[in-house]
Image (cartoon, rainbow, N blue to C red; front, side, top):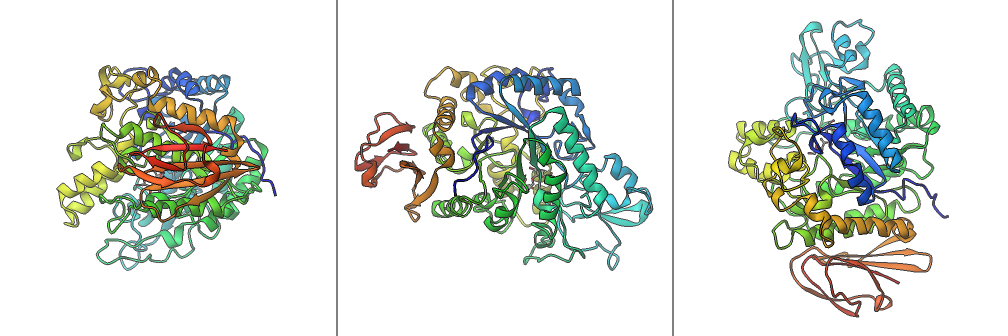
Length: 558
Ligand code: TEU
C-alpha cells in the first residue's frame, strides 16, 4: 500500500536554541527579535519548519526546560507581542513554527506547584507525584537524570516529590485527568494563536508504573535506574491518543516526540501512519552507542557497523508503518562533526558534508540544529567554571567528589560530550563575539569563530552552508528522497556507509566514507555511469571501480 503523503514528511526542520541564536538588545542572551533578524538566513537555507526550544517564562534552572508559566514569554527573550510578530514574519516566508512542549514536569516556581506543596488537601496537590518517606528515607532508589536522588523532601507537608530531572523540575501526575485537561487547553491556546505543532519533551516518560518500584542498580552505582518503570509506561499511548482526540485532530500540525528509551516496536505505536498519536519520534539508539559504564561520560568512538545497524533497523522496520525523524544534533548532543566526523582543519568541512549527505538522503524528516549547517565544532572548554549546563556541572561534582572519575578525566569527557558544546553562541561573523551579541555572552563563544562563521560561508559556494542548501533543494525536487525505500548495503564494512533508495523505477546509491583512508571499491553494475546528484569532492566519476577519498560522499541516481 502506498503510504500517506504529508507536508511534514516533505519538510526539513531547523532547531533554534533561542538563548544562543542571536541577541538583539545587547544583554548577552539571544532573543525573539534576534530570531526575526535571521529569518531570511533560514529562508535562504531552504528549511520549512523551525523547532523553537522553550521560550516560556522560566527561572532557567535548565535553560527554559523548567517552565513557570506556559502562556508567558521569558523576559530575556522578549514579549508576547514579539512572539506574535515572529510567528507572522515566519509565516510570511512560508516557514512554520513548532513549539517545544515540556509537560512531563513544570518548574517548582509554577503556580500549580507552589499551591501543590502548601498542604496535603490543596486542590493542586494531586497535580504532582508526592510520596511518604520509606524507612525514614526516599520513597524509592531512583536517581535523577541530573545526578542525586529523583526525590526531594519538602518540609511543609513532610513528604517527598518526584523529579526525574532537576529538583526544580517536579514531575506532573499525568494519571490525574485534570492535569491532562490543563495541558490540552494550553496546547489549544497556542494552536489558536497559529503555531504549527509541538516537539514533545521526554514524552515517553509521562506514565509511571503504579507503586513506583525500586529500579535495577548497577554495581558501584549510587542510585537505581527508573527507566523500566517510567519509559513507555502503562498509559503513555492512551494519553497520547487522548491528546490527539482532544486537541491535535482539530488542527493541521507537525508533532515529534522526544522518546528516550524508545524501540522500533514502540515507535510503531507513537508514530503510526494512521496518525492516532504523533507524527514521528526522536530515537536515542544512535546516541547511546558510545555510552558506557558511567552513562555517556567517556571518550568512546562509535563502531560504524553498529551505527549502520541502528539506522537500518529504524529505516526498514518503520517502512510503510510509521515515520522516522532524522537527526545528528540538538541542544543536548555534542557537535556531530567532532563526534562522528573529524574536526581537524583538514577534514572538518569534508566530514561535515559527508555526515549531512549520509543523513539527508535517508527516509524521514531531517532536523538541522543551529550551526550544524556551518560545521560548527565542539568547544575547547578549559575549566569547569566555563560550563553552564546543569547536567554537566552536577555530573562533574557527583563523579569527582565520590572518587568515581578523576577530575582531569571528567574534564576530557565533558569537553567531548557535554551539552554545552551545542549551546555556545551561533557564529554569525568574524566580529566581536561572533556577531552574536554586543554585550557579554552568557556562555563563552567558541574561539574558532574567526574561521567558522555564517558570513564567510554565505560568500563561498563550496561551503558547508551551501552544501546543506543543495541537499535541501534536492529533497524538495525529488520524491525518491522523501518516499523511496531504504536498503542497506555492506553492513559489515567498518569505513563505508552505503545504501540504496528505491522509488518506482528510480534508484539512488549513497556512498559515504566515514574514515580518512582512501577506499577502493566496486559499485553495483546498474549504477555505473549514473548521474551524480551531489558530492563533497570535485571530479567524481561513476565508474565500476571507485576510489572513495577521505570522508568522501557521493550520491548517484539512475
Ligand atoms: O531531554 C531529555 C533527555 O533525555 C536528556 O536528559 C538527555 O538524555 C540528556 O540531555 C543527554 O545527556 C529533554 C531536553 O531535551 C533537555 O534539554 C532537558 O534538560 C530535559 O528534557 C528536561 O526537560
